[in-house]
Length: 301
Image (cartoon, rainbow, N blue to C red):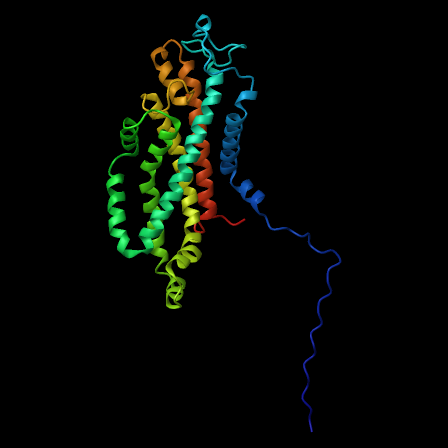
C-alpha cells in the first residue's frame, strides 16, 4: 500500500541583518516642500501681518504729524519712503496703513463667511426657503461688488467700521451661492438619506453631516474674499468714499499722491507695492489651500 507524499513545509527566509531605514510619513513639512509657492505666500502674509502689528516699533513716527517744512522730501536715510505734500513720513503711513487693510480684509472674510454659510445651509437644505432667499441673493449679485459698496458708503459716513459692513454685504451673496451649491449635492448622498430615514432632526443633520463638508470650500473662498476686500477698501479710500483721510490707509496715501504722480511717484509707488504684495500673498495661500483641501487636486505626501 503506497503512502501519499506529504508536501515539504516552506522554510521562512532569514531576516536581514540590517533592516531598511524607517521612513516617517511626511506631513505638513513634506507638503510645504512640494508646494513652495504656498509656503512663500504664507511667509509673505505673515511678514505683512507682523508689519501691521509691530508698526509702532519699526522706527516709525506719528503718521498724522504735519511738517510743512519737510514736505515732498525724496527717499533718503532719514525718510526711507520720502514725505508727502504735507510733510508726513510716507514710511510710517505705509506701515500703519497695513493695519487698516489687514483689519478690513480679515474682518470681511470672517463675517461674510459666517453669514453666507448660515444662509447657504438654510437655503440649500430647506427646500421651501431656497426660492425666496436665492432670488434676493441673485438680485444683490447683479450689482458689481464695488458699486454696491460705494452705494452703501454713500448712505453712511466714512469710517473703517462702515467700510467693513459695506464690503461684507457685497460679498455675502457669493458665499451663500457657493455653500448652497455644495449643500445641494450633499443632501442627496446616501448617508443623509439614512439619517433622514432614522428620524434625525434637520438641525442635527446639518450640524453633523452637512456643515463639516462645507468647511473646505468656504475656507478657500475666504482667502479670495480677504484679498478682494483689501482691493475694494483701497478703491473706496482712493475715490474718497472709504476711510477718512486722517486715517492712514494705502488707498488714502495713493489718493493724496496722485496729483504729484509725475514728479513725486514714490508717494504712490510704495503703498501700491505693499498692497500688491499682500494681495499676492493671500491669493497664493488660497491656491495652496485649494490644492490641499480638494481631494481631486491634492498631491500625495
